[in-house]
Image (cartoon, rainbow, N blue to C red; front, side):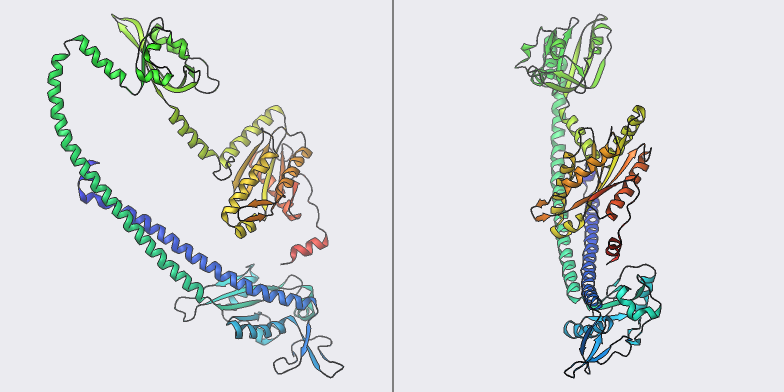
Length: 580
């Protein structure tokens, strides 16, 4: 290690490490910036499509609209409809504008005013002008394979930054007036609407962001590299200084050693040196005779045990005062500490507790070594150290490994362990337990609208509300995202589990107040029971998940149990579910 710091040629690895870290950070941020640009671009295409689709739906719901016949709006030769062309009592000629006709006219206005090209297209068009061209053919074929939409960023080398977006047109009852003759039925994909629009502004924002990222990462790299070199230089100088001091110290130690060889002849000085060592040790040290009475005690032991001085312990039965016990709140007294006195056996206890002068508990690690004089055990020496910080650190590590950092609920690993234990307990006692799979409805919408900080606030508040609906013996865990799982042991019946689910649904239906505004969400809950529905952990979770999706299908803000038959939707609900 010292050779690494003393020779400058070994300073290159830290610089390479910083370079790799900063480079990886830069590449990740570049990827994120490009992803954000693509998201902005596709949202614009979705917006334009949505506006056109809403206009078409309005037209279809009203059976089309009539407009004045003009050079720009002649009678549609491809429309076969009753009363397609009419004359008003005042003699004005009107022609029926169906959704497709109106879309074509709107696309001309949109392109003229915004530069956005909108095209209604199909692989089987009534109007040849609607025939798919180029990339539109690929998009329409993708819709036939099940794609929900098509989006493409500008290709490299294009002179104009134009994005391409397309979404399918799904046949509805109103569409059959024109398209039933082509063999289409309700729900069929009969074409799509394509949108070609400029995204130069988004590309410019992306370029500016990339330059900012490059400048920031370069600055960070220079700062880290400079600080690293400065620190290495300072450490090198310190090591050189320490080497010089060590040489001087070694010479001094050698001189002092020669002097001590003469001093050790006197036992009193030797005992004095030993006393100094004990008194200035960071560990607590005390000695006892064979009856357990304290014969000596260093200041560290008195301080750790809460006594004003070591004299307060001398001559007293120290083992009776500190009462060593095993680790844990219900620790048992340790009888083995007397083995060092009776049998001359060394003892090492890594996790125990001593009683302090004020009655408090001191976590310690201690050792006991017997004292031999003329082959006989005459007492023992105890050394101990405070392990409070170590136990707190282990507790933090355990909690971080088993609890969700955001909601402070058990995580998936701890949940699965508790569920296994609950199943084993229920199997032994012939009891019933319930698993509730809870999914927050509309959480993503609230998270996207109010921001991630507000979303975190909602998740923490939701966790507290759900905990308030459960017993102390129940377990509520966060699986990730907006999904939670509750384990309810000792459930009397399916109705009892549904009562808990109803409480949770009612609690989560109340508004959530966040610093960014008020959000309204709800919960869909699936319930599975052991042993009624499943007898294994994974099957219980899957069944509860399946029941939760049935609750979502039933309109959300409700619960379903796996053992119940799914309730059929009314026709109106089916129509609503099929609507875009």
